[in-house]
Length: 233
Image 1: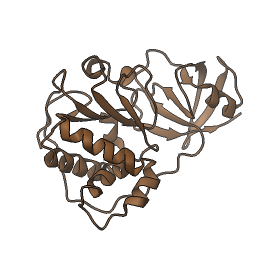
Image 2: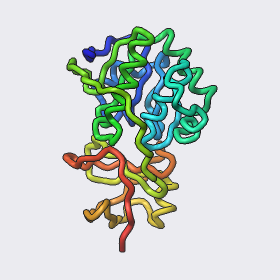
Image 3: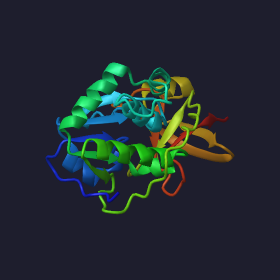
Image 4: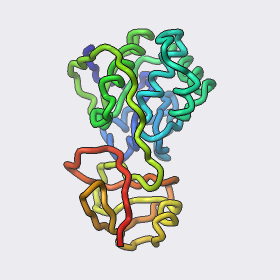
């Protein structure tokens, strides 16, 4: 399926994580109340209606929407809803929105998801079902090549503190009061932590607009979007 450039003013369902920071050019085009977006982290600068899901659960959200269209009867909608934390009423509201929408916009960060093939499959399925255009967060035209649907991969465990790779203009770890409390740290402290076997050290910055256990850090060329961290001394 051919990806299109988003057309300003068109209704869109967005799968975007902190677009005001990570997708600044696109954000200028989509930031209005005529949008809905699904993410595990709320972007307080985004005027669109927010639907909160679990970290990394995009394939389950998409599968739930498809299942409620009376497709893919092998899928269990109660399980999909529980795993993604998108309730059935919310999902039906999203489907009603898609009936009037023009676009689905998805985050380029999803390319780093381990179940990206199923994500692509369901994005194309929904776009075709509702006669919508597909766009990515880079707003570039390209060919989206899909495979057949395969069993959904089990979601990763993101209990604890998590970082989102973000296009920040500084090297601070931006976080909420809750993040600081769990890390047992104060604003502007140096935090030492590891991701898998790689160690990091960076200064914390309290962002009053952030909530929850997801912090933002610019990893530049690191090959992940979301990652659990382990605090070290």
